[in-house]
Structure formats: C-alpha cells, structure tokens
Length: 316
Ligand code: ATR
Picture 1 (cartoon, rainbow, N blue to C red):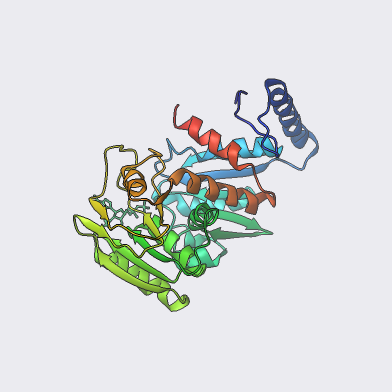
Picture 2: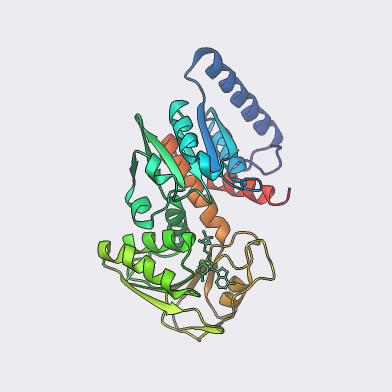
C-alpha cells in the first residue's frame, strides 16, 4: 500500500511517505525474522463462496501492518461440501483465526469446539478464535453494529425498530437484546422469519420482542430511538430502496443502515431528512473487523487504517 494518508500513527497523525516506507521495511523484516527464527507468522483466512469482491483481507492486512503484527491473511473459496475439511485444515495448520462469510455462517457451527453467547443466540458465526487448542465461533457482526451505535448513545432502554429478519438482522437483534434494549420490533416482508428470531432469542433476554409486517409503504412510528435498516435492499444498488415514510418525532432518533456500499443510501438520506442521525454500514463493517483483530491479537487495531483500506478497496 502506498503513502499519502493511508496510514496513521496511534495518535492519528497521518504518516508521511518516509514513515510509511520505514514501517513497510520493518514489517518485511519482521516477516523474514519470523520465518528464520520464529515464532512463525500468525495465519488467518476468510472462507465463503463467493468471496471474490470481499475486501476483508485488505482491511485485515492493513491493520496487521500498521500494528507491526507479523501475519498472513488469505481469502479462500470454500464450497458447501468442503466446510468440514476447511475447518479441519484451519485446525491442523494451527491458524490463529478466521472469518466466515455467506453461505457458511451457520454450517460451520458443528465443526467448531465451542460458541460465544453472541454466536449461540444468533445461530451464526462470522469469526473463529483460537483459544489454546480449541477453535471458538463468535459473532462480531452484531458487536460491530453495537459499537457503531454506542459511540453515539448507549442502546440500554432504547425502543428499536429493525427492518429485516435475515442473518444480519439476527446478529444485530441478539446484540441489542444482550445489551439491554427495552423493546425491539422486527418488521419483515416474511413475518414468519421475524417470529423465528423472537422464538430463538426471547427465552434468554429481558427485552420485549415483537413483530410487524413490512407492508408497502411502511410508516415508521414516532416513538423509536433507533431504526435499523437490516435488509439487503440497496446493497451494491444505489437505486434500491424500501418504500418507507417517517412519522415526525420529537425524539433524537438514530437511523442505521447495514448496507455499506453505497455508503450513502436512500434510507439514510430519508432518515436525515426526517431529522434522524444517520449511521452508515461502513462503520459496522470496520468495527466488526476491528473487534475480530482485538480478539485474535489482544491489541486494538487502528480503526482509521482499516476504514481507509476499505474505502480504497471499493474504488478498485
Ligand atoms: P443477510 O445475511 O444480508 O441478512 P439474508 O439472510 O438473505 O441476508 O436476509 C435478507 C433480508 O432482506 C431479509 O429480511 C429479506 O426479507 P424476507 O425475509 O422477506 O426475504 C430482506 N429483503 C430482501 N429483499 C427485499 C425486498 N425487495 N423487500 C423487502 N425486504 C427484502
């Protein structure tokens, strides 16, 4: 990666060309030393299908380089019939961690040695963490989302509307409930899927969970503190939008979209026009990656380095 604002020091000072060159030279040296004298570089991968176009590797490599953490990260296409083999391989080769993406977030579960509470309740794994000889499945999607909201306001006691009931919605609803949201209404086109999430999570949390049919047009009531667009509508489709209207509200509402490309969606534009504070999906994507890096390395990576690498990836 080149210089000119792509790397930051820990105090967020943008590195100049010479500082970047020094860092890259040091990183290369560390890699060589690891091979010759050990400990060997940590290994990571992202498994899914398709994975071409998934920028996780670029974001993770940028984070590792900026932390001077000697590591290799690969993007691997894994077909449905090789999920067990891929996990066995990750274990046999002593990988330090991995990311899991569609369509394997659920099918990897039987091959792991344990699950965190987030992964168990959401029923999906997007991050594998090595603990000794055990490989534990976690879900950092919801935690990444939570962080992107809690930098603005704690979710405790919030009234929330989540639009959508797919994998992303499930991870988000789980984390909101685990962190004390007061009430969550799940509005989905297929109402049964909203009910399935309620049945799975409700016995384990205090949050009041309810469902609603996502009719067209859908009118967003005035009493929500947080409205989350968690459907896939608009992803890679700047024209894609839900047919929604916002009731005027006196509340300081937050509106969050899980769609990260484009960053500025129709949903966020309509939310802002209605007076809500917009939170885009790019932050969630970076935070879930940053949380994974923290779990793998025990250190906090530089959020800005990771965000910049993603923004750059989307222009390639
Ligand atoms: P992800 O992992 O991105 O959440 P998913 O599990 O396939 O993807 O879920 C997609 C979500 O987007 C679902 O809530 C889906 O609604 P249905 O459960 O009714 O299918 C929602 N979705 C996709 N296209 C939609 C559309 N055109 N209008 C409304 N909701 C839509």
